[in-house]
Image 1 (cartoon, rainbow, N blue to C red):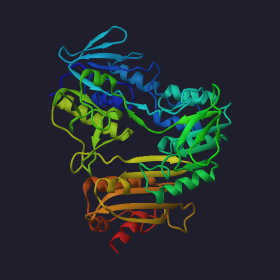
Image 2 (tube, helix red, strand yellow):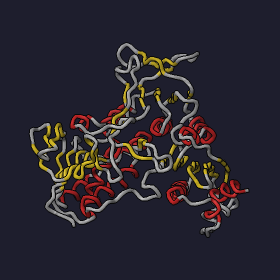
Image 3 (cartoon, rainbow, N blue to C red):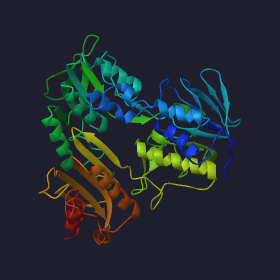
Image 4 (cartoon, one colour):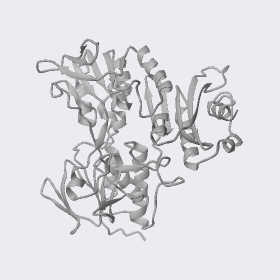
Length: 454
């Protein structure tokens, strides 16, 4: 049963930590919640940073959530801002902060997040080289926008592509460099990624793929970027490193918790942390600092996504308060890592595996890619939509979708089908809703499934 007297200490004030607090309150815990966060500012939306850079969101202050923090305090949450936990004593169940404070706990939750990967490039230390991994990074870039004329973005993943479009929205000359042969390789196959690449090119973003940055040049401040091969140095007065993130696990490692092969903390399906070969019942971790199990391949992966953290927060809160064994929903209690972004007006969604990820796991999927419409083609405002599906053993294992509207709903539907391990012919025989103002008939998902079974 729920015990309101138990002290729950959450380390980390990002999306993961905040949602644990939110779930505990939602499920009825009214006291004994302590949140320790390094940041001195209010909670904020990290996913909103590229859209402030691009101007869709007007100011950096707009992505702050001061009302959220006030609601937490009104629900008796003790928030310790500008504070970092430096040591955890598992035996005595206390944590020590950089301010010399000692916090006792009954349950401990580690949500220390991620940090930007910074490649060891010559010149990486120069003024004008930055990342976009937190609010402070966003402020630095935002303050430079009026002075910046040329930007080089290193990395063609989520953040890199979002920023490529964002800088072009500001009228800034932008070059995006991706070491792999196409952009967004973690979430799209090449045939789908080309649609996003074409949109970025139409916006005026120079795309360079299959090449590696070898040096950042300039006497003290960045002036250009050198690229291997025959490319001449690319001029830049700002270089944005967006080659990925890795789990922030320093505190957990120091405490002795097990780290996985991908660099994230090892947890069980209830998010308990592991030490000396044993999972501890009173210590949890979640969010960008942990590894998760892919529901399809059964192998570990990293999933630095908001919705992954929200599911994990619910699992942790239910386990703390109800003391029942809870794990993520789905056939095997794993994650399929659904992704969604907006790049230059294109909605880009993905669920499950890409072809490359499937083949790496020893799965050789059947694939289909089709073009359809978001409404009946005759209806005003109808937009093209592109879909690619991956099928194995008559079941969906992956879906990729690109269009200018309605992508989120369909990607969520595909995600649910993958979780349910639904067979293709069963899906085709299910009734669907329709009106020409909101859908074509058959819609693009059904067209793709029909083609798979033809």
